[in-house]
Image (cartoon, rainbow, N blue to C red; front, side):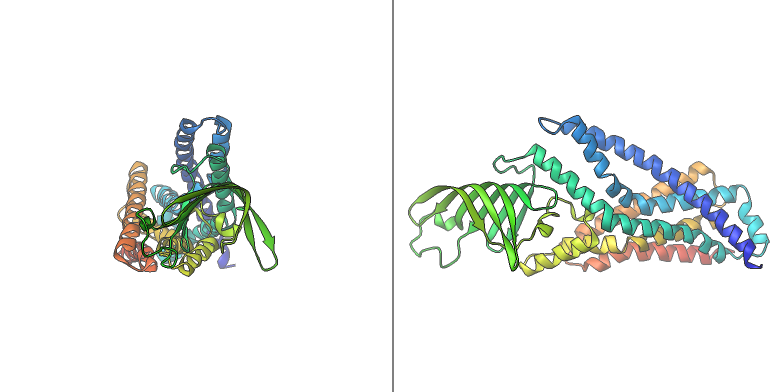
Length: 375
């Protein structure tokens, strides 16, 4: 029976904090959706109509929710617990013999719900919808045009530079495939003309490509191929209705080409990083996003701990408006530090794991120190 009062207190705090989190994410998400929709409507043209823009925003909604979850936990904990402090409910609970750290644990429990929801969204829901949204948008806006630098994605595969205007959802159909093959040492004669010294062996463009699966791998069947070859003293052009393209690039990898690293799944980021490493390319950008998404629950926990320390410490008697201001300020500061460390780690060669952990550990340490000073 001794645990029953504590169970009631946990339930009461959980409801307060979760309700505050729901209010916070609803307000922030509404503003974000409105601005995103206005931006997409400004880009609507031809096949990419207003209805397609609205569908794009709806499909990318889970990704936006995932990115906002840590700051939702921060604001919800700060506001929900702050309301209880304003009504002197925390004083009453502590007077009943409940320790401060026991109250901290009661607030952290709802944060675990947010952390679990974030992992489900980030791994299974948001990436597939994000890929579908961006693929459909790219197909509608680019289609089978020649290379469009404003759309699609560049990648290096072996001695080829590849640009794909658009990738259909699932990654098994490509539109507007441009390939630039570099000349190897054996392919370039000693008396080569200036055209050969540019380092290009040939350029080709295919209107579309479809993946043909086989038991021992698979290949891409290119359609309506235009090719230009650079010889030692001449240039040759050719047109082919179809061509088989054998390359170690599966639809699963291609499906994430159009999606920004911070909006891909955790497993997808890891697999893509390994693919980059196998090609001799720098994979730090993908490992940085991988660690960022994998450790997002820790970031959520650190922000909640910091919010609780503020309520029991300097913000115990603060007004609601000031608490909201502090939540926004802390969230912005945390985001700025993350965004500064990411390019710095890539530029200076800092380990991606360290760059992701530094703001999380700093935030958690500040929260623990603040709690230890609470009497």
